[in-house]
Length: 264
Image (cartoon, rainbow, N blue to C red; front, top):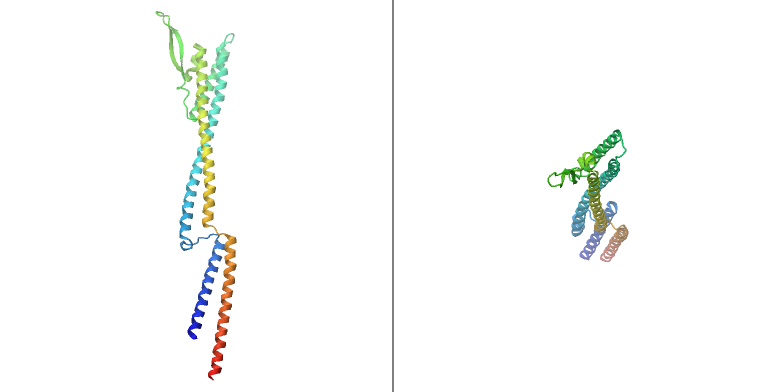
């Protein structure tokens, strides 16, 4: 009889201890908000959540890099836009200079001064935008005629020579301005294509970030509804274990008392 009582008592004690441990684990998950507080809680879940965390860190770095790239592209686009605006002004000055009939020397000198100032601004903004139109944009300018053959003598000139070209060959000056405008428009279009690609990449990264964060949360975060239910269940079982142990002890004492009376 004593052996049976000891076995029952041990079983009830073990059940009570198991319920206490389960209750403590539920309290911990609810207080920390994490379903995995140590490796033993879920080895596979721990590995999965750490992989997700690693990928999130990589995505954060890639998004930061993409944002910097987009900012640089926006700056470059603005500089190219400024260059185009200056080229439009320059084109107007070239047209004025090409129709110099009736202008005084002072008026023509003022136009040349404005052209020089516009070229300085264009050189700065184009260089900042990463393109070289001052020397790369060229055309042929007629500078004379071969006395022997009667063929025109030409010289290769660039946008930086615009002031001198305008005095000699207004049509060549206009070709230089048009060529520079085409080069800047092409460069700005290329920047726009790259900016669109960067924006698309950013959206893909943002979507992946949301999905990975959701997956990490599902593998690691506490399910409060489920854990609260588990806590209530273990609290009930723990109380039931205690009451059962008390009842078992009381029954054992009663039986022993009866045996004692009989033996007496």
